[in-house]
Amino acid sequence: MSRNAIYPGTFDPITNGHHDLVRRAAGIFDRVIVAIASNPNKAPMFPLDARIDLARRVLDDLPNVEIMGYSELTVEFASRHRATVIIRGLRAISDFEFEFQLANMNRHLDRDIETVFLTPQEQFTFISSSLVREIAVLGGDVHEFVHPIVEAELKKHRKVK
Image 1 (tube, rainbow, N blue to C red):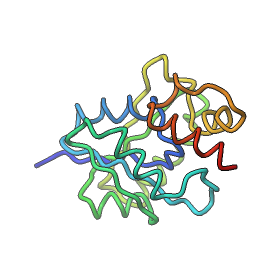
Image 2: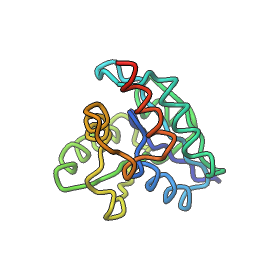
Image 3: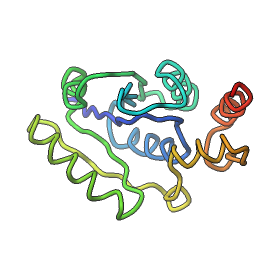
């Protein structure tokens, strides 16, 4: 029986912290699906197709990782793809309350799916997609926080605005 996991999020954009967690999860699980949420409640910088494309290009060195978009409940997506684990990242104590609530709700919705929390390496604990977007929009240097492919797309996006 293979151990399949999903790592859901908006990944707007995918950061080095995300890459770190995916790489480490790929060493634990047989198959990891990076599940990129369309999330109509957020106003992403990049459309879903672009976020999927960026993630595929950034994570292409990990053979047991797949990238997919989705617009359903996370537990439904996980179940449909035979994943029994949802991976969530915890950067700081401030993340814990929301993530704990989310994990309990997901368990309530589907008792067969567990949530596993991973913490990023220390150098990635302060990185978030929202901070990276803000720095990029204001013309700051984001090369330490994202893959060069993402950095180039952020620069293009800034020029378009």
